[in-house]
Length: 292
Image 1 (tube, rainbow, N blue to C red):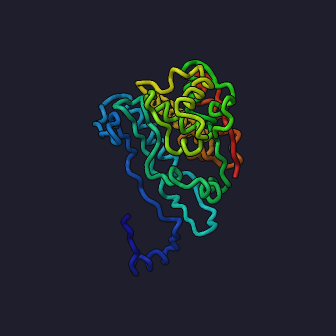
Image 2 (cartoon, rainbow, N blue to C red):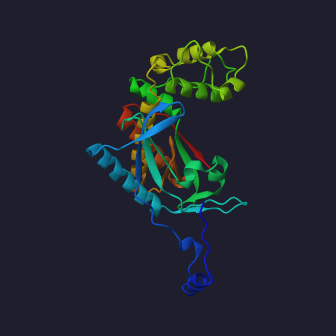
Image 3 (cartoon, rainbow, N blue to C red):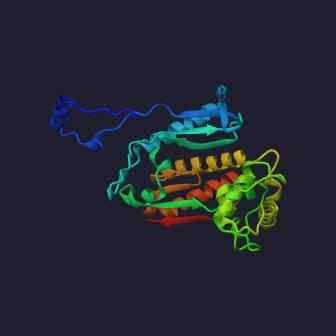
């Protein structure tokens, strides 16, 4: 990281005009869209962006979002020694598998995307208020169900036929099943394996998840994994919902499957997020609110 230190003349000039630290910002670079190829080993090759109306539309949308984010009223509570660099707000989108309809999740240097959850909840203020997280419950499975024209019956991550398998473990395994082919040789993700009782083999766990989520069983563990496609739907929903929030006068920060908003605007943001999901997927998701 490059650090710049003000010299005596700059300090003197700043004091003369009453310049404060909060007055200092930056002019962000143009929004970035990145197109990656198929995953080979642990890497993806960066591909040239095609010249197309789709790319132009994505760039306009990202520029609009960036302008809103740059003007959002974001501050920190200032408790403890942890500092939030609220001036870091640049976002980008990364598409996968050489397709502009796969991936697309927001990334970049925007501070809230990598801010530890505990710090985000305790110290971030939007429009001077504590935040609320407005979240699509079990977003990826919910999108998968909608993809086949259905809605989940309860929590897709809960396994009534195996109640001793923790929800977090099921979530990790389902993500593996959305993102990779599952065969007789497949192993559970290491983190999930540590949480799951030894009595359950990988085959047992995969089978229980497919039984619990029978309507989308054919989407799990496919030879042509659907994970990147589901991520694209998720990213489109969050992008649209965030822009609608600003149109409604709500300063919002997009996360992967959620929005961060002022606590007082949580109910309105919930309606907006649900509507964006319905417009894209034609099904109504369960959206939760956590206030802090």
